[in-house]
Structures are given as C-alpha cells and as structure tokens.
Amino acid sequence: MKNTRTVCIALLALFMSFSAFAQKGKVLFVISEADTLLLQKGKKKRQTGVFLNEFYLTHKSIADAGFAIDYATPTGKKATIDQESLDDDYWEGKLELKPEAIEFWKTNETFSNPMPLAEAIEKQEEYIGLVIPGGQGLMIDLIYDNNTAVLLKKFAADKKAIGLICHAPALITTIPKKDNPFVGYKVNSITPIEEFYVEKFIMKGKPKNRKIARQLKNLGLEYDRGGPGKGFATRDRNLVSSQNPYSGVDFNELFLKVLKEMK
Image (cartoon, rainbow, N blue to C red):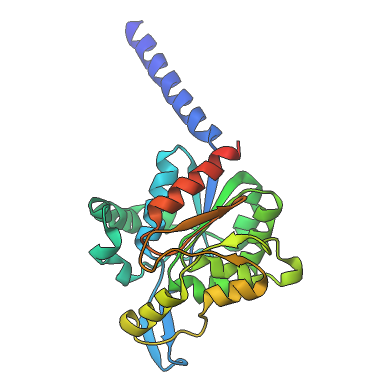
C-alpha cells in the first residue's frame, strides 16, 4: 500500500511537471539546411551552415525557461553546422557549453529529424514564438524559400514573438514592401563593417547576397547597430534582432521577455 502511494505521488508530480512545461507554450526554430556557400560569383566554394553558438545558446535559454521547442528546415533535412562557429572565440564566456552544444547537434533525435517548412506552416497556430538562428546558410536556402515569408508574415500578423539572429533579419527582405509587416520597425543585423571583415579575412570572398543593412533600410526599416564585434540586440514590438555571434546574452534577455508577454 505504501509503495503504491509513493508511486502515485511520483506520477502526480511528474504529470504536474509536464503540465507546467506545456503551459509555457512552444517555440519554433526555423533553421537552414544548406552546407555550401558559393563565393566570387560561383568560382569558390566554402563550407557553411548554421552558426552553432547562435543556435544553441538561444535554444538553451528558451528550453531552460520551460518552453517546448520544435524544429523546421526547408525540406526536413538535418541542419549542417558552420565549422567556423566551432572556434573558441565565438564562445567567449560560454566555452564550457561548446561540448554540450556539439553533443546536442550530433545526438538529439528531434533536432536531427526536423519537419519541412510546409508542415510548420500547417502547425504554426501551435507556437507562440519563432526563432531563426544566423549563419550564411540561410542566405542560400531560407531567403529563396517562399515558406519563409509566409511564416514571418503569419507570426507578425498574430503578434507572436519573432527572433532573428545576425544574418536572419535579411529574411525580412523576402517580403515585398507593400505586404511587409515590418516596414517602420527598428531592426538590427550583421553590420556593413562586420560583413566586410568576414568576407575579407574569414571567407576570403564575397557571396551573392550581401549588404543586409542597406537592403533593410531601402525596404523602409529603421536600422540600428552596436559596435563591430560587440554584443548588441534590439527589440521593436514583438520583433527581436541581433547583430553577431557575440550578441547571445543581449538577444536572449530581450526575446525571453517577449515570450513571457505572449501568455
């Protein structure tokens, strides 16, 4: 009898734990699945993908706050990690989390089996927030995928939390100005000087799609920025955007505030 009571209490506690978790709501991570970047008008190839720290540090922040998370890529293929993002420099102050992030990327079953974007659109009512991590990969696939614009417009119309990291604000430019819900918003992204530095000294070549800040300003958004190589993020209404791989703390603080306002 005593053992039965103990088991019942344990099951009840587990149920309450899951219920509290579910009540927080779900967040959708939309991630690039691209792995190759063409530079110098297609003459040079470079490995690319998602910047691991931009994905994982935000993912951990949201998960630790009690929100459930789903993943989507253009066709349902597992995301590739940009090998540049494994450099210790990008993990300043969080270096102890790099092995944990790599292990998650390699072994997490749900992350390894994302849904296609088309399915995410069908399920979008389930989510209170959308996050798109940075990396050059999204400049290859997500920016040319019509489903990306559909999701952004829907989350904006429903006033849900939207988080765009580093290169991801470029995805706003996939929506024509006359239909663009973000026109007039304050936004941040990788800055022109940071783009120049990456192209000149890291990638050693220019990609097809670049000059993100200029594109955003031409579209009618108010572009804001911090110092090059420094953490910076900004919020305007339900949109949170950040500048570079060093902006995780700033981004996560702002985005969690928006998520908590969704309930």
